[in-house]
Image 1: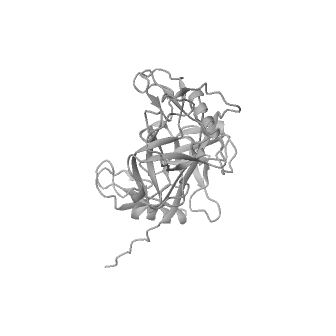
Image 2: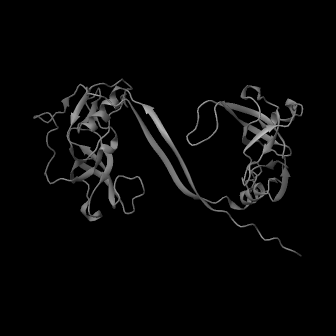
Image 3: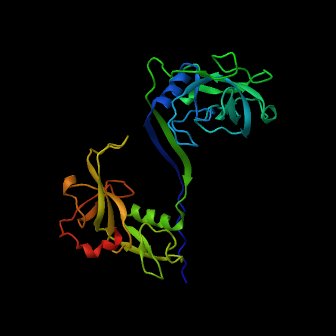
Length: 327
């Protein structure tokens, strides 16, 4: 008996990254612009509690909040956790504590980094102050971190001499009206045996799925098990290469670092013999001529491990009843 050895398990670093862009309302705009000017603003609720960072609606009554107040740059640690191995992009490159700090005059705590020589130097109740960034642009990173501060008790908030946060009109020159925050996730991806075989097949310009021995559905890409029947999918089945567009969307926003002119079409494509549809871009046809039931085939580029896009085959459109269960 000849035993076929399993394919090499693939592993590769994977980075998911995109810029998150949002516009700011008057409260968030005032808060971030204030940080640029070394001013910390909170917002007072109907009950008199001061929220820092400020929010636009009262979390208890849902009332709109606009009563901005200035709080101090000093505060008290309410809780903390030590970070012995900072990751890229975190506030400090050396070990530090993540701390919740209730600034003097605030009724809630602000999460940020606390620069300390070690965990033995951090405690709940310790007094700290803001260390401002040398260059500020109107972002939470304008607070470089917190640092220990040797005063004994909470002092009065900035702008007052009586222990009550001073009202602030939120007006600044050149206010910050929007922010773009990069979101990034780094990890090592291992596809497992089923998808490893699938990827090896794509390298040979073949699409290989796996059939469930119970319901007979062919999964492409394979998952190693049938999510419906809960049994292993061990029978490999080659499908396609042609298929049918089951549904699609027109993309009108150009993605960063993607050399494709908009508009273009991204579709669900049910390959012949497959039990569910996969994703693919449609090319070789004007975007407004793509339709459900369109018959397509893959187009490969030199050295690619997967199809670049799918194009029409010229066959008559598939009847709706042949793919309606795959929408």
